[in-house]
Amino acid sequence: MNPLLELTGLTVLRDGRPVLSGVDLTLRPGERVALVGPNGAGKTTLLRAIIGLEPAAAGRIRLFGEECATEPAFRKFRPRIGFLFQDSDDQLFCPTVVEDVAFGPLNLGLGAAEAERQAIATLEELGIGHLAQRVTHRLSGGEKRLVCLAGLLAMKPDVMMLDEPTNGVDDEHGRQLRQALLDCPAALLLVSHDSQFVGGLATRAMIIRQGRLLRAEIHDHPHVHQHFHIHLAHDARGGAEDN
Image 1 (cartoon, helix red, strand yellow):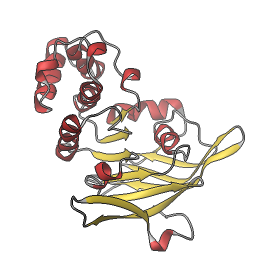
Image 2 (cartoon, helix red, strand yellow; image 1 turned 90 degrees about the vertical axis):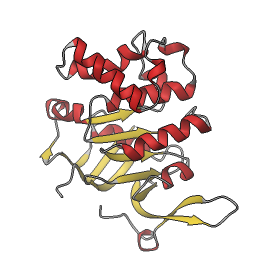
Image 3 (spheres, rainbow, N blue to C red; image 1 turned 120 degrees about the vertical axis):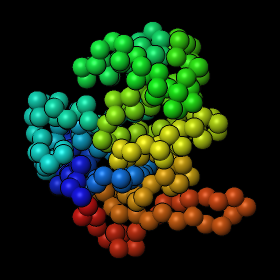
């Protein structure tokens, strides 16, 4: 299958120093890739660079087979890439839940009635249809997270990039979130410190270390409960992964 995203030798600088250095990454349809690493490693920077919100100092970014190096080129493909921000309050801006979820479909050209129907259907699929008329800023942290996800899913993207999706999410909403992502047909890039959450979702994993993107392995070790762990792959400990 043709890649949805391709990064080749991507380097991003901040204050003249590399945050990301020579990053190679390929994402294909159906993949769910976990991106892990310590605070400040460049995980969010990588997601932002993919959609042109961080300028590349070197390397190439190809989205859906086309090279993107200018704002108009990135803008063309942003509707096909859903981006879940770390902070839900940065993503919710309409007065009510249904208005917020319908905003994306409206921007894609749907009429108001059809956009609202699509928003309500998406909320129902996530099990949060009862929130449709709620005021967004009065939701709990977990409810906000699911509403943000609904806003992305309503646009039917080909790729979903999720930055710390379990931020502020309790166990019950976490289970709803996990099931929604398992059911999602889009390819996923999952940035998280929650190895248990992403390890149970991801088809493969990468670790960002000292600005390099390295292949990792996902293991589940027997405990009283099952726990997933992500470790640097043995063959990646000496250098960067090719893709």
